[in-house]
Length: 282
Ligand code: AMP
Image (cartoon, rainbow, N blue to C red; front, side, top):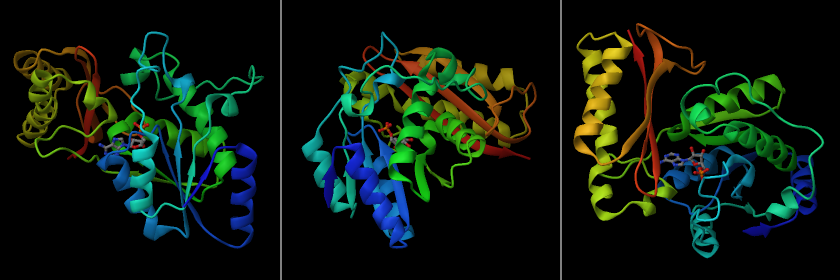
């Protein structure tokens, strides 16, 4: 496995491999790898000749009051995990390498972003789209792997790939969870012991709504209220949002039907956790 830190070297290497007819599968991450990231690498490995992992904590997608500096990092551990998963290249650029000066073009995501995390994290998806355009052009993958834990990100990337005609197949991978249902996240290390005990209630709230849908409930507000009540009663976290939309276009629904997403974000003392389920309401 090779570690590459410069854009020029990475791009040259990828162009060379493509010229040899190799297929490239790409897994973008911010590092501090866990089972969720591993599942993306595991999916990519047999589907591509070459697997590239990037590790880059992208300053552009963090708001001024968010956890950019405190974001957990451990390159040595990540390196070992990538090696164990059979990754061929780690692209590990510095912020200066990725953003050497002021940009001359600004990327602004206009659809699928005024709801969920896009609403409570203004500018977040502009930052995600900007870095991905750069990374896609540097790595030039045929397939890119994203986790459905960040389902809004998957929806935004789907729009980005289609709008800008990237010749990339987007592969969405199911959320990997702890045994008690908590979605694996690099940010789970910020939870204190009591919050960690409470955190699975987020997923339980989503399941309560799913069960209600299976029993015939179709009213969006009723379902949202059920989840809110469950979380407020069973955790010390502060609900940032609980919302239900069509998926992947993220349009409002008074009455649910078709493919939908039920998504939530809850703030604990040091961690803001997100979770969602996507289902087909018949
Ligand atoms: P991050 O490092 O948090 O930016 O995540 C990098 C990629 O891993 C994104 O596509 C995430 O959606 C995905 N990911 C993070 N957590 C999970 C999880 N628990 N299950 C599946 N994919 C995940």
